[in-house]
Amino acid sequence: MDLEFHDDPAAFLDAAGGYLGAEPVISTAVSTIADRAAREVEAGVAQHPRNWYAVARDTSGGVVGAAMRTAPFEPHPMFVLPMPVDAAVELARAVHARGESAGGVNGVLPATRACADELARLEGGTVVETMHTRLFHLSELVAPAPVEGRLRLAREDEIELCFEWFEAFRRDADAQAGRTTGHDVLGLSKDDVLHRIRDGLISLWEDASREVVHLTGANAPALGVARIGPVYTPERCRGRGFASAAVAQVSREMLAAGVRPCLFADQANPISNLIYLRLGYQPLVDMVNLGVTTAIPA
Image (cartoon, rainbow, N blue to C red):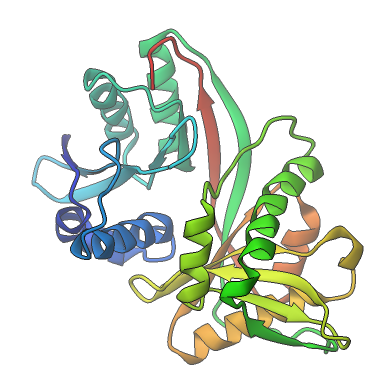
């Protein structure tokens, strides 16, 4: 296996575009982030020097896997897409040889587990599963029962509420799953959330009294696929169908635009999984977040 590392997201997309496009739903996290970063670089926005994207090639030069390290939150885990197990092991060795410790590995099984196990072996650490997720995709929407109210785009003057609910989503997900430590799958700053509002990627549900009772976020499309999330309803407003109605409408709009919707669901939260299944979402692949303890600085 041959591994090449890119700090230029556009160069990475040029190298791995065919691989990413072959399974655009499975590659959604990497392609979305790399595409956004490439647009930021073009606009003059500096990227963190820690960030990189990796391409794995077989002996014929064909791309057989991809990974990235762009997470803005501690411990800055890697994200690994499907690749042969030996390539995942080589990726861990290459990262170790670079003097890095990713602190964790997220992504598709079994490559993610193989990479994390090798990192732990090299660094004398251990691997701990912090979250098990499942990637769902939608081809045909099953409309939920009607709910009073309406979905609308968030306004810039609602940044405080939106940021608060992004943070609450993270906390509540941990509490519902019985996790005692934050998993911070978003790692977004208030400025990040504001940019999403300006890009029309955050929607709020107003009930019949015009009270805002739910938030559904989304990501810009990449390779014809758009990822929904986070999906958050405050506890006092749950059980009234707001999440189903909002996700259904966002999904319907994506399908109408020729974009395939997908989303990640925490397997420790059966309620959210049931909501998505009832809307017609189908499970595609299991993913895992793995923490790797180490004595090497991140």
